[in-house]
Amino acid sequence: MSKNHRGKGIVDQYRHGRGTCPNCNNTGIKLMYEKELNGKKSMVCKICNVTLKKKEAAAKSAE
Image (cartoon, rainbow, N blue to C red; front, side, top):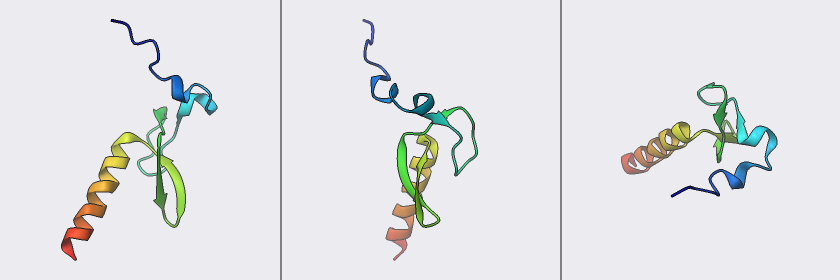
């Protein structure tokens, strides 16, 4: 079965949501997750989103 609506939510974004991740500096990657980096909100890639979530969880469990 075809997936007709895949990526429909990012078609209206600049360059279809692709750019350079401010955290890992990968280029041409989808930036879909808003995270706070160095005190300001930035859009990050999927890999960095998971990495930052794991760091936050580890910091909470260490307390």
